[in-house]
Structure formats: C-alpha cells, structure tokens
Image (cartoon, helix red, strand yellow):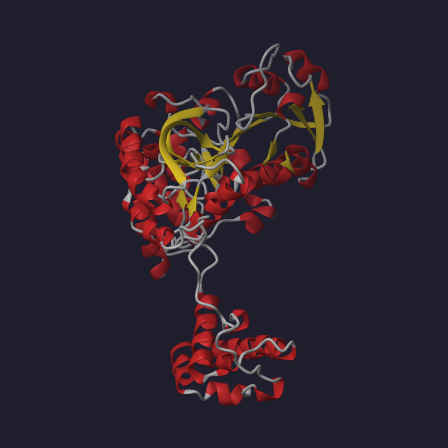
Length: 493
C-alpha cells in the first residue's frame, strides 16, 4: 500500500529499539531538567536562531512528553542522548513554525473550489498587493486635496465604469453585501422574494437567515417552481420596503416552471415607488458564452433592466479576491455606505489592492484569457490538458509500481462548487486503481492520503472505485513531477 513518506520521529513519538539491542528504560527522575536541556550546544544554537520563548515552550512540551513515556516505562535510554534530544527539539520548533495555510495542487476537476480558495489571483494583483503591503499607501487619503479620503474610492470608479452603475461600495463577501443592503434599506419592514429563490449557500447559510439578521421580514410569494407577477402585486403593502430577486447560481429548477424576469419585476417595484435588489451571487463581469462557457447574468445587464441595487462576489467568476460588491443607484448606495454595519464589514487594504488590480484587467477584455487565471483555466484547450496527463502518467505509474494501474481518462470537470455547479467541462486526467480488487476502498483512501502528504499536497477525488486526478488546473506539470519521487520512496504494499 502506498503510504506517506515517513517523517523523522519526534521525541514523544520515538520508536522502541529493536529486541536485538535491548536498552534500559529511563526513569522519570533521570530526565534532564529544562535548564540543562537548553544549555546543550545544539539547543543554545536553536535559541540564538529562534529566540528564547519559542524554544523554551517547545522544550517544556518535549520533556512533558518524555516524562509520560518514562512513567509508562516505555522510554529507552537512547532517547535522552544529547544529540537525540537536540534533534527532537529542533523538529518541534520547526513544526511549530510551519504555516497552517499551504499551497496545494487542485486536481479535483473543480476550478473554483470553495474549499481550496476559489479564484486564483492574477499576477498583476499579486504584484500590486505586495507593493501596497510593503509601504504606506493612500488607503483613506485623498492625494489631490490632502484631506482624508474614502477607501471605497479606490475601486468605485472602476466598478461604475465596468457595470454602468451610478455608485458602488465593497464589503468582505457577498453574504455581507446582501446583509448590509437589506439592513440599510429594509430594516423593520418587509422584503418580497419568490419562494423558488430562497437559496442556501455553503456552510448552511440561508437567505431567510441573512434577512432575519438584517432585521427585515421575509415575505415569500409563489411556489417553489412557479412565481408570477401577480404574486408580487398581491403581496405589496404599506409595510413593503423593496422587492428582491436572487439568481440561483448553485441549483436549477427544471420542468413546469415560471418566474418573473428583472425587467418585469423592476417595473412592478417602481410602479409602487419601491426599489428592487438583485443578488447575482457568482457575478461574472463578461459574457462567458463568448468562450463557449455557460452564460451568466451580468451586473450591467441587471442595472439596464431596471434593478436599483445589484450584489455579487469577487472571488468566483470575476476571478479576484473574496469580496462582496454592491453597485447601483447613488442614493441607495449612499444609504448603504452610511449604515453602521458598513464599518464592521469593510475590507482591508490587502483586499482592496487585489480587487483594484483584478478589475483593471477588465479594461482590456481581449487579454482576459491570458491575464485572468480563472478564465484561462476555464478555457484551457482539451488537447493541452490531455498532454499534461500524458506527461505525468509514466512517472506516476513508476512511482506506484505494478500493484497499481494508472490510466489516462476522459473526465467531466466543474466550473465551481458554488458557481455553476451543475455545468460540466470536458477535461482529461489520470485514473488510479489497485490491480487487486480486494480492499480497494481502503487502498484508495490511503493513496489519497499519501498524495495529500506530499511537499505540495495533491488533491484529487475518489469516484467509481478509482482515484481521479483532473489535469485542467495543472498548467505546470513539473510541480507534480518534481515531487513524485517522495511518493516512490514509500510505494510499498
């Protein structure tokens, strides 16, 4: 069975010496004290490199672990030799300094994978973020007047130019955008929504719960599959604050259906002097159909249809950082911006720098498939993906050995786990399965674990009794090929 490469054993995980070389178990009182341990030459060097606090904390933890082994009479004398103690302490210190967030290879077949960070930032955004984080910047300073400025101004003009909105503001995600908009425009009043649009997004966050948190009262109209204009008309009363339409980007109701489009719903709202809000969720800024991808409604189209406020995400189809973008009528955006929740939900300089750089790419739409990683991956040629699979297959087969089959396969990928989840992308990759069917499920789980323990973890998916690695998101095969040797070292079954 393929197992992760064995890590160097820490002091608390030390193996017993073989029976061929018996050693005397250490008694608790024989363990060195903390001061003695820290004065070993190697430990002195650790303190000089990493500081007294961290090394001391890890030394205490190491001695506590060794003491438990000694009390249980399971600590060989070899494990308290000075060089062994120094090595164990060094490993603990380095392990503590390792970041919890790591880069991985997304070979799941889902380009905008919620659990793997969604959109990859374009190079221009990474460069701009680095520059803005390294020096003071004009986050809230108007360089023209020399007075205090508004951080929204960094991206507002770009958002208005790209969507045709009169004004725009930004918060930390789209759920926050909906929450803030409702709190500012409909607190203690009613919001009318079609029953078929009461979405639930990842993490069990439901639109009705967001509305309740905003202090508004939900009024459902229509049925799950059919809602008509008369349903909205009959529900409007003196308590109504606004009408709302939600784009169901993470599911589709098919069959005997009916809904009211944005133009018709805006007409109804405006006839009653009410604003209309549209939540687009994923929020593409360009027509994806131009590249043969499923078409998504655009914020600029919603505004032209008469929607007064439109909310959408920054880290899905837009291809930027996590953000909730709110565009629309100036008077409504001003009310939203002045609400006390806005400060609690405002975005940092890091996010604004990444968002501004990403939005600037849309000023040159002809270059988007080159400059925007999300669109580049979604439009990657099938032949190129197949070539990557062919390049990886021989090395992976050699690493796993004759007890495994590694075969090129045609696959169906996914645009996003929360963005167009039912749409499929023709793709290609590798399928791995044990030659022997016995214990197949356990074998696949262990192989998946082994891949996750590579220096750059490889994340695939198990389906149809095979471990599948979709190559759409592996643009540089060397990232995988360069670490397959780590897998080969432990490919025993």
